[in-house]
Length: 116
Image (tube, rainbow, N blue to C red; front, side, top):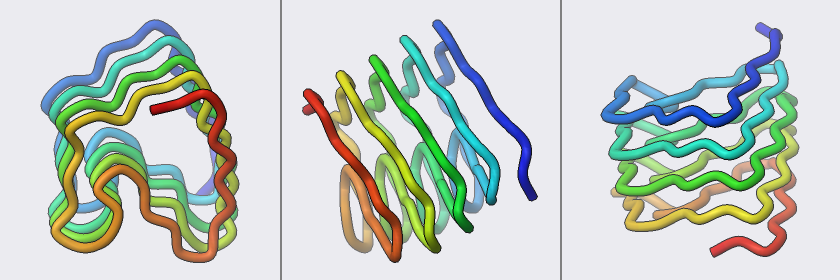
C-alpha cells in the first residue's frame, strides 16, 4: 500500500496484468507527464491504469491507446475513494468487456480537462 510513481516522457507498450495492465496504484500517488501507454491489457479491471483505495493521480499530456480490460475500464479504472485529474490527454481505441471503454468509476472522483 502507498508509495509514489512518477513517469515523465515514458512509453509503456504491451504491458499486461490481472488488474491495471500498465500501472496499479493502491492508496499511493501517481504523476504522469508527457507519456504514452500503448496496447496494454488487464484480465479484469483497468486495461491501462488502476487507481484504488484513496490513491491520488495526476495524468497530464498522456496518450492511452489500444488498451483493453476483461472487466471495467478499458483505459482507466478508479475506485474506492480514488481521486484523479486527467488533463490535456488522449484516451483512444480502448475497450472493456464490462463498463467504460475509456474510463470507469466506482466511488471515485475524476476531473477531466481538455482531453479526448
